[in-house]
Image (cartoon, rainbow, N blue to C red; front, side, top):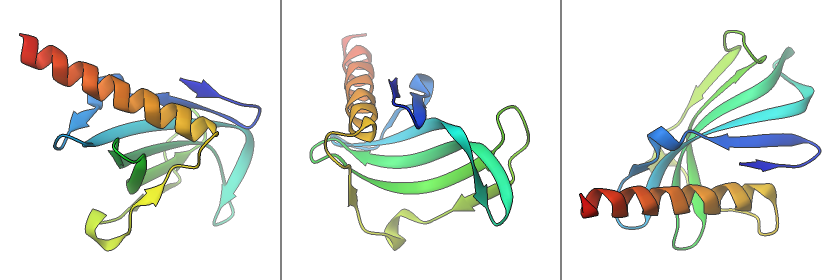
Length: 116
């Protein structure tokens, strides 16, 4: 979906869920080109579930799993959406490209459901 020299972001298009007219639940997978550490354990993949607002491109992270690609997660973090403020997607980044793509997917899926 989006890529730069540091990482690649993919969206699980089968699980873009509409919460209301402007919010979507989105699952992203980020593959890092360089291994990172979390509490001393290596990982190069993150699977993130987030709430995404398409009206202003803001988000809240609901959960994150960190792992080496193809292996079991080394960490799982989960938060409550109400416990955090909306954060804005930084413009001009691959995160913005991924967020806009997720919004487009969500809107197309919602339109397809209405047309059935």
